[in-house]
Image 1 (tube, rainbow, N blue to C red):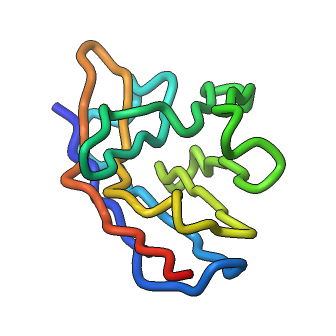
Image 2 (cartoon, rainbow, N blue to C red):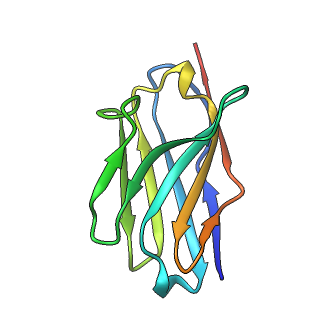
Length: 114
């Protein structure tokens, strides 16, 4: 079992920045890829970014160049640095970890005002 706890969400004006963190606990030795997803009202959940255990990254086109995903394997934590935020980035952001199963956090709300 893996437990994920997100933090760092909040309310920010357009153009601002936030840094999300996701701390993993439990069977962390088996974690491979970690990622961030988001769910906005009236929309389907979408991939934001993924990072492999070795540091390879994939980004959604809508956030490429503005968001940066990173991880600290020693701390079992994945981060999402979000810059140049836009109102359309408003969503509930979820952390995901792939292990022997796929695990999800409870989410952290990001609200970007125009």
